[in-house]
Image (cartoon, helix red, strand yellow):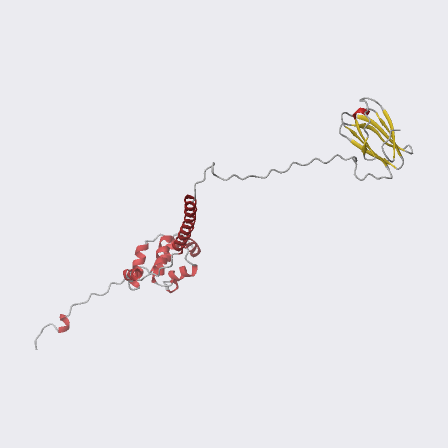
Length: 277
């Protein structure tokens, strides 16, 4: 029997694992918070991390964080709030939970998005502009063709000069024929009354007119160009202050008596032909 090492003694020896003597993440955060004199509520207000999650992390319960990504973010935020090194605590978290996951390559996704064909939408703006251009061209062509046709017709016609152009002769309207003098200056003078018309032609005149019963019909000044007409059943009595300036009609007939300018005449007329009283 030979003396020697057994096969088991030839196997390489495995060093004993080194135990991590660091405090846990939650214990380190809680102790640093207490040393800083902060409450859980104050840390929650400054970090925007809810109070139940802060309590759970300090108990090393990361299940309420919603995943490793959020857990690392909360650990990093709480470490800064209590004055610890965020990188060291995040490294400790990765060592305890299997390390940081490898990032998902984004190149294939982007490549797929780039290769995917896009549906082209109809360009309504270009279509509208093209339609407007077509309409404007059609209208311009129509107007140009019409103007060219009119110019051609005028050019082909005989030349018209001012000397050969026909003149339009407008008929001269006949001059109004003056009415034939009538013996009556007042139309349809009633035959059963006495009618007197006085007109101041050359100058003003004071006149007075009374009826047969003595009733005063008018007493005043008759200005140049003014007229007065009086009627009565039997007789009219007149006083003309400036008789030469008055044109007198009695019962529709002109009185041809020549009165002197400035003369005062007293006259009376009845039905029938004019007759000075």
